[in-house]
Amino acid sequence: RIRSDLTFPQVPIIAMTASAIDGEKERCLDAGMDDYLTKPMKIGTLSVMVRKWLLDTSKLSVGEVLDTSVIRELTKLDEPGMNTIFGELAQLYIEMTPGRVLNLRAESLAGNFDKVRSIAHQLKSSSGNIGALTLSSACQELEDLDASRWKTEAPDLITKIEYEVERANYAIRAMNKDSKIGRVA
Image (cartoon, rainbow, N blue to C red; front, side):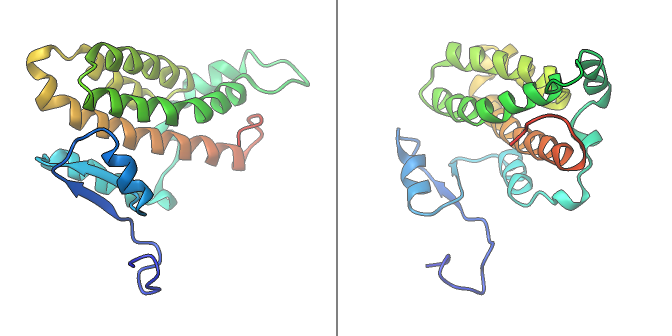
């Protein structure tokens, strides 16, 4: 009903539920929610979620999200007449990362910590390769968590990773609009 009320045209709707059952997030998203949080929730998780959905991209500069020295190094590898190396990496990143982030959350909820570490490792590497160093660092933190800190720290780190992925994808698309970095969709 909120979506049909024109006084709230762009309000993000985030489900908050006590249920962490498999498929619950999908049910919430299918019902029209934009995102999903489970209780009990930490203030850090809520803070990252709010920033994720209320990210003011008009004030976001590429240099805040992507280390431009990494991008400059990649451009040194470019060959005339070919897509840029950064453009190719960025395209793959935008295509692959959303699925990895969904798997990261799902595997965490399922308690598959070895899989979470593996996905975090992949995200750490691919994010570092495109210069998303804050994101890469958050993935490293998640990968390094020991069992005693998993339940208390992993949910907030995963939410931070989700937020930083949104920022990285925005920055990549902004670079594509501002210059010729390759074939980024």
